Every structure is written in C-alpha cells, then in structure tokens.
Length: 185
Image 1 (cartoon, rainbow, N blue to C red):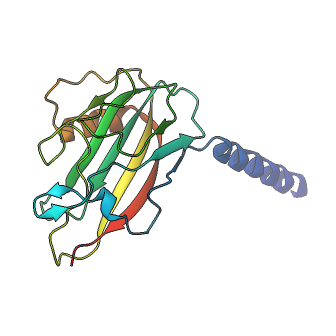
Image 2: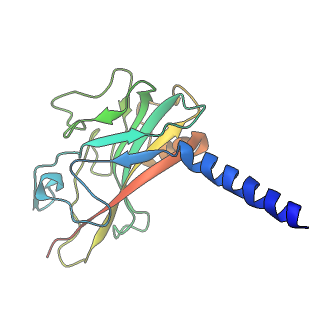
C-alpha cells in the first residue's frame, strides 16, 4: 500500500510538471490582467475619442503540434446579447511570437505576411478599441492568443466574427488570455 501511494505521488508530480512545462503564456507591455486599459486603446468613433491602438502582445510556451496562431479581442459585457468582437486575426505564421502596439491598424499594415484580419463588430477589418456605453459600468476585454493545429484557417474573405470564432475554437490546441478592463463614465 505504501509503495502504491508513493508511486501515485511521483506520477502526479511528473504529470503536473509536464502539463505546466510548456504552457502557452500571453504577455503585453500595454495591457495587464484585471487592470484598466489606457485611452490609447479606446475606439475613435461612436462617441469615443481614443487612440484606437491595438495593444502589444507577446506569447511563449508554444504547445507541441502548433502550426499557426490566431488573436482575438472580445467584450462579453457589450449590451448586444452576443458580446462584441473588437479584433480577430487568423493565419499568423508559426514563426511569429509578437505583435507590436498598433499592429491592428489597417492604415499602416504591419501584420505578418499571410495573416488575415476578420471584420470586427464596428464593421472594419482591423482593431477596434474599447467603447462601452457611458454609465454601463466596467467591461472586460479578453485578448487571447490561440495556438492552432492547422497552418491556415480556410475562411471566406467576408467571414463573420462568429464563423471565425467557430473555426478558431475548432482548431485550438491551447490558448492564453489577458482580461483587461475599461469603463466610460
């Protein structure tokens, strides 16, 4: 009995350390978990007057089998019944590990070759910053990197955010999220 408990303890330790050894991790110089984003990341339009810059994002701990990446930015608190897609980028090559601040700007294309931005819920392809309704309270913005099992998601040019989200989730090996906050009084 004593040997089996010792074996289970060693097995448990080995399994837990291998699970966390290469865990996908998302970091940023611009946003932080459970902290408010700056006005740089507020939308410019719809009554908002921010810089409309996508945040710097960097990821590490790439899981085995990863062939490409996708980035999503989503506000589940938007009063739409279905949340709000602020940004979706698919087909980011396996060699890429970082996006600079304002990479989602469609006027200054700096995204990796081969990647594709999906139309956001503002109706544009690119990053659309935070712009919760005034007095609606704190909104939670989930910036997520997805390690995908395919080199390319086959999506039509006019793919909806829901379709892109479905395809991303269908091929995600592992993901990592920074949930930042924003509020307009």
